[in-house]
Length: 139
Image 1 (tube, helix red, strand yellow):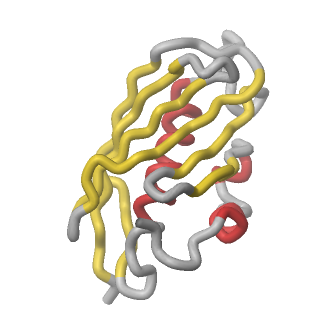
Image 2: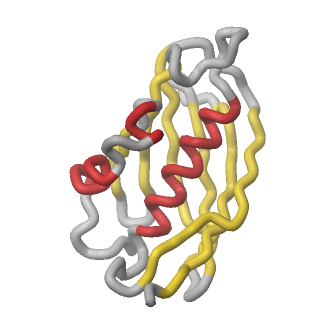
């Protein structure tokens, strides 16, 4: 489903010198209809009580959903931007890593909807998010 030429190295290189790199987010797998990433739970991603910051979870979800959405379109003709994102924070995390998987619910000509599930190292659900992307034509 992803555009030919999309690979882990290219996607991670694209994120250099951005918030994605600053938070330690890394794309780890690209499947036929999903994309995976990981993010550390450390001083960059914790809130003052020492727990994973909900905003960091949303940054992970938006990063993965956006990259996945953009990887479906022809980058010479189109690009994707976020319209809406939501998230339900289910379980706290104090340390280690969180892992995210993005899967499409709808891939249309002008919109896409992706679900992102974030889990901890024990595969417990930490956050579930949905992002709606607008597919824009390049001018």
